[in-house]
Length: 277
Image 1 (spheres, helix red, strand yellow):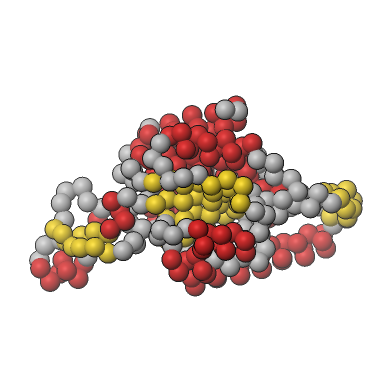
Image 2 (cartoon, rainbow, N blue to C red):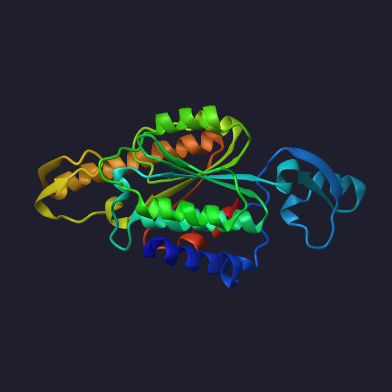
């Protein structure tokens, strides 16, 4: 195992099983899966599962029980195009690796099935559903060792592949910077989708850099340009319009989303977002 993967695994395992996340019963509770039954509330149940209409009628608290809560199928997709090879604090791809480990350990801890998919312009890795720590170690190592440069994030191909191959209803996490024309409607119909948007603050709010020679990380093509005030204004407008369209689509399709910056603690940001539902 490479040093980067080992460091991430040690850190996230300590977080999930230790004080940071360990006091939380599960990162995945209350995901809105298929309703199975009502039962009377017992001490320790999540109060968010209380069915208030039934509680009011019967005069004592009842909670909703969901079938898949007994064993969720947690699928984590690492979308690793060339644009993930960037970061002023740490690379966006390193944040992906930390989130893969966090979600993997959280799933295994909760006795849920964990599957990892590594995708860019095509499918590169897909693990079998597992409850073993080895599968998490392999997933993190795959992400940290992946050659990002020269690869484009193709969401159309990803959606087609998942729609065809992912037969069982899943809690589906997609990790990406989500730049470009993206439509996850087909996936949201069958699965409970969570989009984790990974960004660096500089790419959303860059400063004037003057005349530079740059490289497109997806195509590996070099080009020159003047990064002046006018260029920055147009760029920021394009990023804003991209995100406005993206978030509007997510809300319409019932897709939950959270943005994680490279200078934030990924596990805490994700946990807080999931707790808010």
